Image (tube, rainbow, N blue to C red; front, side, top):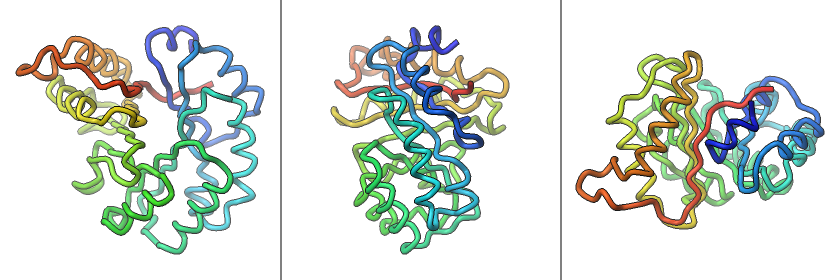
Length: 240
């Protein structure tokens, strides 16, 4: 399935790593199954984000990173999704991202879901550690709908709305997303992940967005405009 998928899209998010570890050789097999240029985003385990809640997690991060290094050059990003109950604590967040950055230089995107994370102070802290803040839909607060943190890592993560994980996005919403992608400066690390997978809407939306980008149909006033020379990566959750 991955081999076929990778002929149509240039990236995928491995979500299963959140709930269970994969052996390094599994990641190596996935890396060898995709063409050059394909990239994986890998979700950090819930043992780090939800159980340890970012505190003293070095012993959890090290084996996870040793496993995902099996992806080699295809490892494009690490996703840190936080529980809705986790309020921002500057000391905890600084210690965690400092530790993470000592262990890896891989691009990192953080998806906080508590309202306290959406402030200029938090954006500055994330930017200092080269961590992009996910632009999520549905958004926990209005600011959560837009990317934040490190400006060069832009990660849209759309879960389906109004019914999370199920709802299909209408063409108008996809046109807005395509315009936002088009506006991203060249050289930015740009990801779009559709997480509305429960009823199969993710692939439909990814195909439609891809068609909008290819045709310029997202901008009726400038139909010949195209994306800058930045990687635009679309995908859905990855499972074994």
